[in-house]
Image (tube, rainbow, N blue to C red; front, side):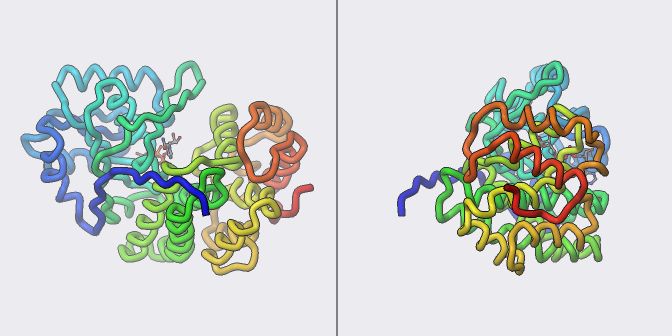
Length: 353
Ligand code: NAD
């Protein structure tokens, strides 16, 4: 055995109703909290501000997908105007991303309250979009210092988004298991995350208000977030980044449609990872197991159903094979084009030659 493991230093508060711990958690880090949310989540942000009482200096409610640089600048100005010394991001990856954009500039701590399964709260990765191009980077300054996971906050999420966001989390764990810098601790977390999400997501879909199932799904998403933040990703994440960025496809839908096919692409090159993924899914084949889970959840399985045009597949294959990066199996333009063909029509994941 030969590995490097570096733990992420985030304090985690997990449990039903734990939003009420916000005030004591924030006061450990600062005294002037700026609450961040999207325009769709002002209700929960108001609740957070109410819990914070005098600790809250304001709410900035314009968080948007992929953190447009104009939004980041406006939020930074608001943070300065209000003298904020801690940022409370309540929402999904877009809101966490806005908190990171402010922390990157000023270095104040973030307290994050995730309401989706995206996992950004466990990573030191920031992203900013300018002129349609998204830049990303790593900086420990943006890793949230405290994360409060309260499963009750995920109940309001539209059902299908819970399923696709859960598949997005599973995709982090799948790639963590064959990452170039994988290590035994993160692999344990990644495997457990797939097991927890595969077990709970069908229940979440059937009984949206079942808080035990919601807790297990959020626990799985937390472990997936740690996996994403700790080891490098590969073909799946690069391809989804290209499809999302260049063709404007919805983030968690793209991850959902692509993950069975990216797994099939790597099937023969990462046998141990495949065995662990399949085992966690309770299936004999990892890629087919992921596809079957999607059929149970009723998520999209075709790129054609989420806004991709067939005539753009060639360009997507060109873009996704342009810059070399690590993947257990070498990435070729023809291989990606074949993968995209299958994903476009929603075929069962097959052996891509
Ligand atoms: P999102 O944050 O864009 O949320 C989508 C919509 O759902 C928003 O309108 C949001 O307000 C709403 N919403 C979220 N939770 C809700 C709830 N519980 N009830 C009702 N509405 C709710 O979606 P996301 O999938 O969480 O995040 C996607 C973004 O996060 C992408 O930009 C992606 O690139 C980024 N991301 C970054 C990292 C990282 O490490 N930096 C990791 C994962 C994702």
